[in-house]
Length: 431
Image (tube, rainbow, N blue to C red; front, side, top):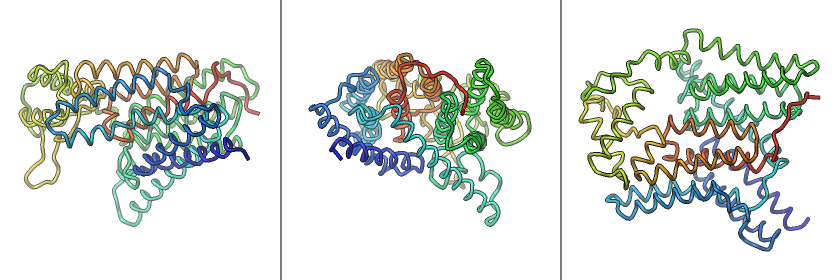
């Protein structure tokens, strides 16, 4: 076996380890795996081409990520709290290292990605089953409430974030749908369709409103593709997709913990955020809170004349001061909770603007534009849907403020990009 093939096998193992680490939230292993993928990839490129640097490094997405990180680094020069800023820079360093690792050689292609995604699907399925089994055990033997089966509580065994796990789960669901689109099944038809329904059930339990909406839209879209293709005997395929849609429709149309999260948004008074002062008893739903952040960010940047430079490491401190000065809930003497204290903007566009001013916002928009450019170049449905979801999620969460948020945002677009063809896949019947 030549050296290049040995390196291919090593990269194969490293990617599987990386999948296990991000799904099960093993932070140290994730960082080590990305570092080893980077080093191994560069060495493989040296063996294959004679150069340590791959031509793939010259892409717009990586350049935009580097620009964004350099602006974060520049903010370190005028920061007051250097220790906090240094931790922040360490977390966001993944926005540079993850794309470089994926672009370090030409290892990932359509065949490699397909093989790796099979492992990803099984790892995800087993991890979710473990969470469900743990929740069932707590409910039956420790008399835990039904909440243990939903949202953050469901993935608490791995100390994961429910919405990010939802996106991991959506990536698995999208892969299964894309396999059908290309005319293949996962082991066999029965297992393939059961996995589709299983992931849809898990998405409902994880209760991410954004991902549930995307999942429903994708199912409708793939039903449309099947009907448009006028295939012979697509009944089992249509039945599985319609079953998924029925499950989503039933959950959203009845009274339960998932539907209440949707109803909560519709019931809130948006004019509430215009008040100058509140009282600690006021509860802000997700939409109200995010609209309030738009107001607070504008006020902070204006008060500190920081539209160009941002407020760097003072961002969270100044937000906390806003929560206190407007009398929002910040905990009580008899409670260990801190209320809204410590809550960031929950919007990556706003977070970039608040921390590093207009240059930071522009650089982040460039990253999003580069992601869209990747999808346009490939003309790949799976990539386009993933990019759209990640950008939409950035309006809902400060994604780049956590290690796994950065990895999620930077890994999947490039992984699908290099693992797809330069033409749209056509739907054909599963044999």
